[in-house]
Length: 117
Image (cartoon, rainbow, N blue to C red; front, side, top):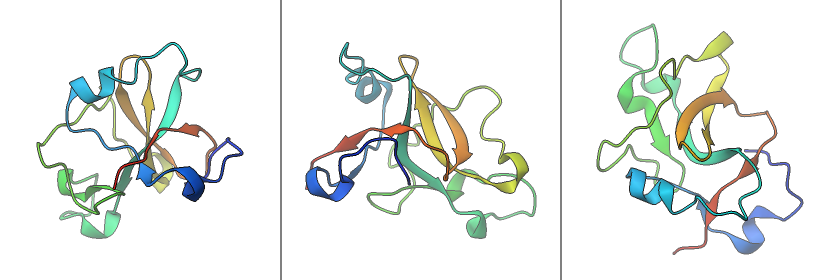
């Protein structure tokens, strides 16, 4: 995932952030978070779709683990994911609502990371 920031991702962070509850998203609602749209660590894998049309719930994986949500938590906006033009396989989150939108991975946004192990 590309980012609009100049900090090298690997220098300071382990991976893009993952979210298993709204409580985890609410911890991000800080005044110093200056952007409203941020990359999170969720990606779609169209190869895992069980049908030829649309996004399968099991095709969305967290980048840190390569796994689906452990809790089943999702926070998609009402019309998402839509896989627009067959290119939207990465996810941004809108702050402060925490709603998710699928986007083309080549678009530039800030990102939310974690420094865990």
